Length: 309
Image (cartoon, rainbow, N blue to C red):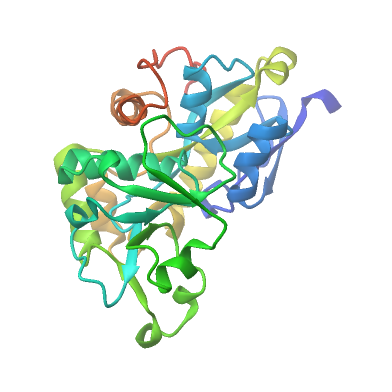
């Protein structure tokens, strides 16, 4: 029936491209779109019935009493954040510890990547987030916690960094990265980011989860079978992506596919609320509390729908 047909909106990841189809009686469609557009739009208008979503934003909304959406423990995007901080190539910064007391641009203060980065900064490098002045656009997805050093800007962060108005920025360079390597004026603060990421995973077991999949609760009432259908479809799509050695499932490319798959226990993107994923989500939740976004740690069984993957 038409009621059983539904569109998932999410990122253009190769390992989710096969999600569309008939899964457990639900006809799933998949619409890839810009996540920078999707997340704020979902928060502002709740326009998507089901979509990929910022894990930090989801835990903040739920932790502060929001009851209009629920998450399936499917985590379609993970990313280490050691290379997330960029600086000018002539900068003296070569260690994340050097960010203490500096001005750092951030596109959105509550974005999951920024929450992970600030948590990493304190836990691994001993730098508290309140020692940094965060420069950010006025329009934010969610309220910025009290006690943070914030400067609002109408300028573009990359332009501010290139002009010397910022010491570093969190995010991806759009213009500079498009230049030939020899002409680029920006670089990562951490010179050997991949080595730091490998060491971090070997020590902690954490491959940071960025996104989950959320369903509006009014849709859940209408289609109670949907969470399992979605989990099944994502898991099947991921299995096919592993079989074709998809470049989107490993953080450092496919050149060392066999070695890196072994490094991640043959499953770099585990789905479900197993012990490993629970530990990773609890780490992020701890950072949210530490950074003032939520007043207490959530019970993880409440925000995640029970599914088998």
